[in-house]
Length: 177
Image 1 (spheres, helix red, strand yellow):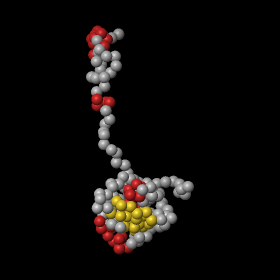
Image 2 (cartoon, helix red, strand yellow):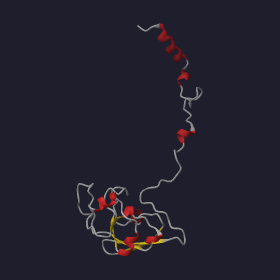
Image 3 (cartoon, one colour):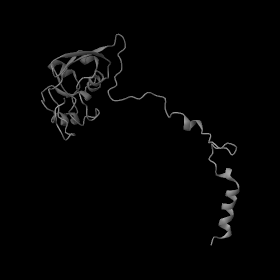
Image 4 (tube, helix red, strand yellow):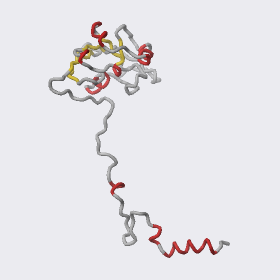
C-alpha cells in the first residue's frame, strides 16, 4: 500500500524518539525545560490606564475646581497636560467618558463657569463641536472634558458638571441608582 520510500523515514523517526523533541527538551529528561522567554513575563512596565493623572511637582501645581450635580465644589491640584476627564475620573467624580476620551461621545461634557477663562482655552476642533451639538444642556461655554488640557493659562479653572449627560451609544437611558 505504501511505498518503501515513505516507510523508511517514518521508521527512522520511531527508532530515534529524541529527534521529535522540541528545542528546549532534552532526551535525558522526561519533563520539558522551558526557555526563560516562555516562563518570564512579557513586560515589567506599569500599565497606564485611562483616568491616569500625573501628580504635580512641588511649586508647579495648577488648580481646577469641579462643581458637581449637587452644586458641591471639588478643588484639585493637577499637573499641566492632564485633561479634565482624567482628573474627574481619578477623583471619582461622576463623569462617564464612554468613548475613552476620543471625542466620540458627549458624556464628559462640562460647562466653564467664567467667560474670561473660557476664552483662554484653545478653540474646540470640529470633532468636539460635532459631539457638543448632541450634549444635554449645551451652553455657550460648553466643552468636552477629554479635550481640555490643563495649562498655566487656565490655572484656577472652574467647571460645572451638567445635571445629566446623553450617551448615544447606550440603548437605555435609565437613571443611576
